[in-house]
Image (cartoon, rainbow, N blue to C red; front, top):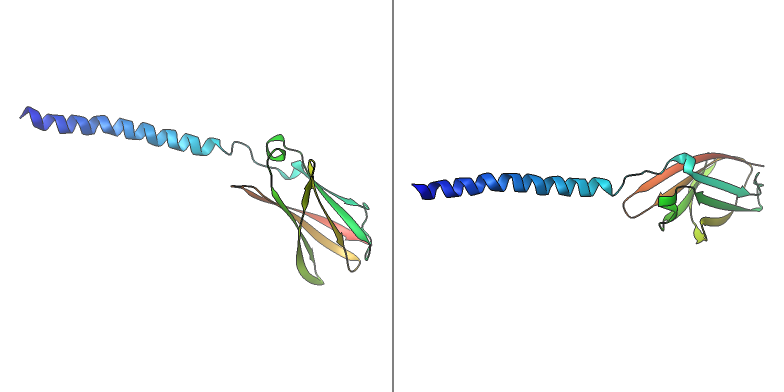
Length: 132
């Protein structure tokens, strides 16, 4: 009869150990993304500041969050207008910023969406842009 108590006591001891391991795994997963990127931490600048149709425009994306700025990202710009299909531009990292040149075909209102892709995160921030 004493042998039947041993398997039960081992099971009862295993339950707290399993719960502890599960808790440690969950804490490890949630602590990896302690901060998220906010739209106020992503700056999109154009040169010239007021783009002109049929002339080159230089786009610069700056990330003002130390955690995300230190990581490499795939940064793409999506150009949308009511008159044409969307275009997706791949940027190049230059120092602390990501850049790409683009020439708008016509004047009008555009929406430029900045897509930032990290290993486990994707962010998209849109900005309205008037082209003369």
